[in-house]
Image 1 (tube, rainbow, N blue to C red):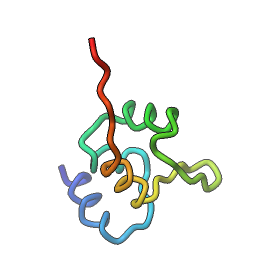
Image 2: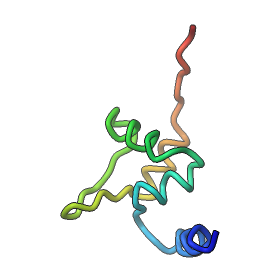
Image 3: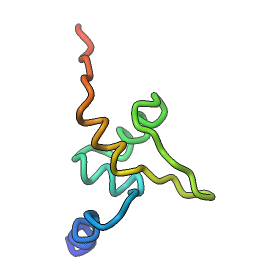
Length: 71
């Protein structure tokens, strides 16, 4: 719980998040974040081997319409 609290405390300060931090902020699994990245619904920036997700990318994702798949 302490690790989660420290992430949430520093989130307002950062410009970009790791995939794990983004998953926690969105309340989804890391696999869902990976899928959104693969489908190009969540833009990322790469710095060396690190994959960073800009905060405005998360906001854009939440503002966009996402149709659900029908049965």
